[in-house]
Image 1 (tube, one colour):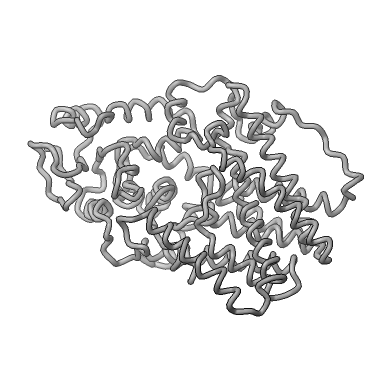
Image 2 (cartoon, helix red, strand yellow):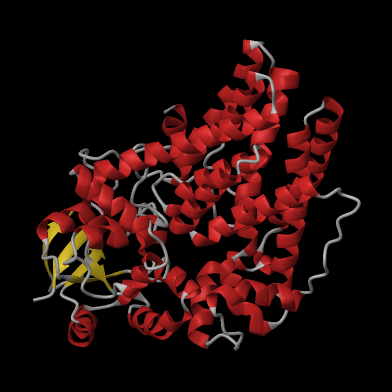
Length: 478
């Protein structure tokens, strides 16, 4: 609960725009009669929307409340998994609790240049795959392989890509545990082979990417190492040195499981870094960048902070309350402040049943309650990046269809290239949004069937706007 209060809750922001519409359409199949392919492509690869939708239907909880319950449960299970793994690495209870506390304090810490947090401020399949992956690694350390396998299957069911990283780390741990370090010979794996190995399960073409696909990837430059800042590169390299130090401490202090995991993580980091470099070089491998090998850092960062907290708890924090306060009070205060800067126009906790403070979210909720289910909306394709919008997703919150947007629908295109041409056609039609006039909106109606517009104040003369607040207008195309 303390972690939740520090990091906040924003159920409809960022990638929730990708994941929640799939749940909403299962709960109410009449939703999203237009452009559903921009979220269904993700939804069809995972049981996440089915699992959440089933829980909503069985529990009869209001949808917003069910999301909150699942989110709180995912935080609890994630921290419980960290405690279970910490128990395998540290014999002293204070070390286990310190590891869990450090991870809890840093849930919304960015993971290098991957555009990921350790745990998001909203429900999504990554959060579920995260706790499943931690439990799986704990099972491997305990040599309860069936237990680990069940957790990995669950992780794969909700997020196949993140589960693959947990599986590879589990494989490394088992390998290092069963074979002596100096007797095990690693096969050589060149860049082409690594790229093909990543591609095989997905049937990926290595043809040069289309111009439409390249345009979509412009919104996701973090897929490419060449666009990372120098300090983000440090987020790949520095953990290897830290883990080497932790492994050395673990051997000196008689902590064999910690030593094993640190050695495995060093290899894990280096292998995925090499894979990321390999797919950056030939242009024909650009399609593979969407699998983002460096998302492997997500699991690495979780374990790195768990181990750092455990070592701090055992050898520095100990039973001295003032040391715990000196570490965690400023840390939690800093993380809270960072979250307020990230969502300045929204409540820190966007709770169900309470009217949102964000005026874009207010308009989206009015649309959910007052417009026809089959309505098709057009709004600024860059609306999630506008000041004051706080990255609230229209589809997820309004539960209505819209023309393709540039921010999140481009993410669907980056993973599913066949969507690129239609995505680009719709986004180009909406370009220079702030200068569009009534005749342009009527063209949307004729070409796509758009019958509602979301505009910023003061709006366009000639539109009928049944809803408005200080920032947003919702207008009907008659």
